[in-house]
Length: 122
Image (tube, rainbow, N blue to C red):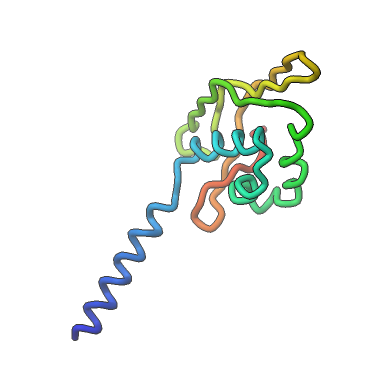
């Protein structure tokens, strides 16, 4: 009986732990953009959807040859859709001249119960 009670408690605790892994998709997009600016391969790989895994190297290298920052990034999900609309910009310094890349709308999907960035929304 004690063994059964212990087993049920462990299953309940495990269920609670997995519930917390589903993050806010708007936070995922901001984290993804920051990792892209930083060239953080591990973070990008963890936040990139399976459909776009083949683009990881390109994403990592996007701003690798320039000084870049993520400025005033705020995102909002369009209801329960898979679209996250963002404002703000990535600002890259190309030889002393700043170039702004405005943030836009992005698609998010759930892979294995976790939100992932999956490219620009159409």
